[in-house]
Length: 417
Ligand SMILES: [Zn+2]
Ligand SMILES: [Zn+2]
Image (cartoon, rainbow, N blue to C red):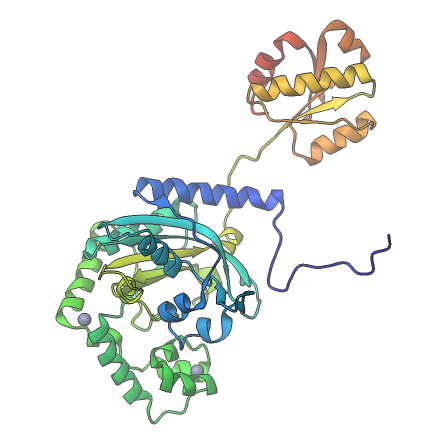
């Protein structure tokens, strides 16, 4: 059948192949182990949710809700949205299960979706790994979450990263600041988008990357000057505890994050080589969100790490996998012996790739090399007869004849296959 046109993947998405996934799996494994050390357990929620969950939590007048959501109607006319982030989903699941039994620690990993302009490191389907800690009001909890993030980045062996820290205060402080910022911007003419933001959600102006707007933002009132006594004390304590645990951070009074639900502590992680516009991880406290989504008032804090940018800047694991390659030299009798041998090796935890296709030894060795095998096991008619096999060390092409009955021990001895 003639196929007219090749179908390509949708814009803003990507495929991952085994050689790239080595790094992903390594980074994910480190994250899961680390989350476990801090008492976090995994939660999995649907990829789509009722649209209202996101518009109510993230905020109607945010870029995400206004422009970036994948929203559709199902066959019954319900408005559903592919999750643009996971915090609201985790809260929804927690409340639906009847949560609210005090403190809870969850982590998640999975794809998120935003209809954004694709560019380097930014995709429409992207992966986040993150944690949510419910029922913790104490500034020591903020410190622990930031410490955990710092710990993760060290285990991922990212040497140069910077944590930016700010406090947005409670609803009262935020309102006072919103008014002050609005008054400051009143007579100033900003870019078209910011003019709209001014009216609808003035804090979003602080996110503008437009150089003209930036020059005004640099002189704008600082949210930290509008904190009430409680919020101010909370922020002081967070900084004090971070100093105590020797977690380095920088203060950034204009850091507000792109979502409306944050209160008090907010933070972002940057890599100097990517610049200040691209956060690789971000999070903060959201003390009112659980209540706003129908639960009891429950203080909470969390963060998410963007995996694409992380992986692109990782060296990954030092040791790559090296399966033992079983070459097969044609004859049915040899093939059958190879099949049995492959099973025996695998049962002994040796990773094996067996070739069953009739190819020349040369082409099989070539394939073994491509697959990263350090050793190739060859059985020819002579070896089959004598109960032996040839173990070929790909480095230096040395060959040793070994008895098949001693194979497992021998291979474990040369090791690292
Ligand atoms: Zn306050
Ligand atoms: Zn602007």
